[in-house]
Image (cartoon, rainbow over all chains, first blue to last red; front, top):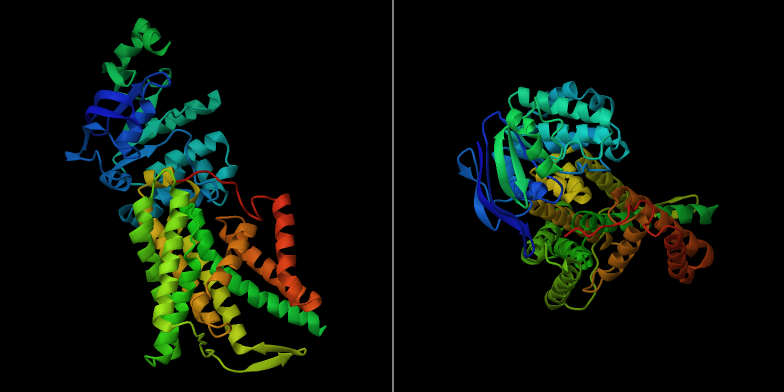
Length: 233
Length: 292
């Protein structure tokens, strides 16, 4: 489904990703694990077209999407939920969710999709007319996930879902991601924390200095404490 | 009592005019973080095209006015496509956009001078006649301007709040990266904003050409007033701009009625300075960030 091959990307003259390759299959959940500053966010930004790769390619459903505009990549079925959630602060929860369904195909089904999102995140249903800027950190994360689900995407790429959340909220967020994946949507998670990925992801890629240094099955990797200590501290 | 009614009527009329002009500027600032110095020239395009359709092509009033509005919207779109789209994302975008729109404004104003000459023109009012209310003369054209402005504000509000493209304009204004990640094509959104903004400036030009004279430099004053309103309301805030338009319109009219016409402009700027010292982001401004 998603195939990243020898990807190079960065900002200005400074390269962050060096020949990075990974794959996500249909309905699969994959985690990219790395400490801060090793290229997780850059990887997601390069896949979603916010920055353009300098070399290598990204294919999705057999079609090359690297170098295309962000709107075309969304149209192909890739949704990126960025670090910090980036809600539209002066728009209501409802308007934020509707913007998730911007593409005409998703817009036509917005009512059904709203029902599904509210079923998964009931708190959003209670806050439909509230401005996004007034939401708590946990509610904002739910809104970002819900907005991503509105898009009728095939894969959800989520950057640091636990960042800045109180511990009791983190489990709720990962539970919601598990539900999303169980419903058939592929998930590519960028995380620096290995604690929550067991039972969620099928495979893990360990990243160091912008390249994959290890990949494998989640259970095997998480059992290897020496490896985790070496790469994640 | 007559003075009070005179000031209120004048204030509402001025506020409607300023609002029509200023909303376009604020929409552009909100989405592109760009000061469109060609906005006054789009006002001219609306006025001159409607005047030409009415007086030279002898079309009826309504189609003539519509042509003026459409022409100004198209001119806004042309400026966006030919000039602004080419400099999007450049490091000095703000300055480059100001120079580009100033250039467009010089071209349009000079074009108007070449085609229509320097002699002033006036559009006949859409509705002739007037009546007196508590001693105040109220023209039907004045009422039309107020009604069209209010209807335009309501329709624009509905468009921004209810429609897919309207919501996307707000989304791009508030968080451009997130908007791109939702699949919103930002360049297309900018083009929609520029066309709407131009059409609103053109509408102001069509309506006001029967109140003020039409001349190649006639767009400058409305643009300066619109700029004042936009800054006072809080750059990028549509709600703030409408409030500010009527507040400034009423203040100007009250100063004119009670202290004479000479006091209006200095009084207005003094008020602006005090307001901006107290509240630098304007009535509804939210602070700014570099966007493009």
